[in-house]
Image (cartoon, rainbow, N blue to C red):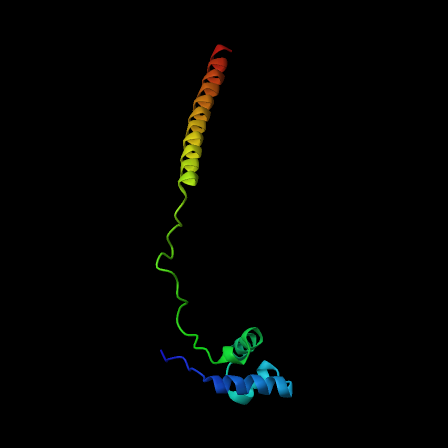
Length: 115
């Protein structure tokens, strides 16, 4: 597996300015410079969003995340208590519905037996 080729900011700027000044398409620039049109289109987007300075930034590797990335945020005490109360209420409701369902099934069964 070969390493990815990196391009200097000067080359990026030259390609984008050539596209802008000479009304080249990305595929024309790809043929002229031997750089994939997807890379050139990314440079063009960066140029539009950040200007020429954006072409000189190094953008390799993964984006840096916080040390607690992937961990849930700390909940406030009130939110945590509310969630615990709701969880208990839902468990009680679930038990009630199970018992009600068992009672209905028992009545249906006894009604069938009496017929």
